[in-house]
Length: 173
Image (cartoon, rainbow, N blue to C red):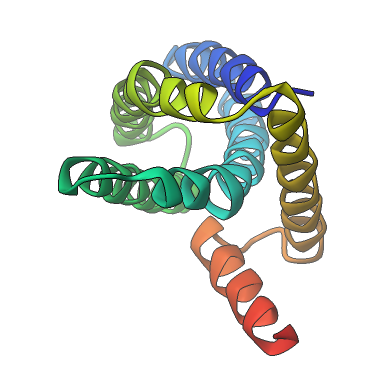
């Protein structure tokens, strides 16, 4: 599958799921379990972007602005990881839980808009269909590894997963 199409479809899923989680009238157990599912999907999604898409964009960067835009995207991922970890540690009945989910959704909305309007078009312009398919395959591998890691370490953060994957990668080189 085309990686940009897949990532864009997942963006829709995140927007919808987080909007529903902001409803304070849902059962807290249900909200917490739904959040855990969203957090898991976000971690897998981020792995594909951080390990495949963003490095490709870095290789295309032709000026300081492009490099800054990619660094900015990495930092937004870090912010999402921090918020997810904070929310994961809270009681879903706490009003602050709903407030943090709202902040997470707003942060993701901003990030998604930048990716879809600025970053993804640069990638689409630089790669033909065959190259995009190859990126899709690479992204699928990164995501599968992230999925395996998440299943083995269900209470770990996305940051822990990224550190573990980077460590494993450097050991294999």
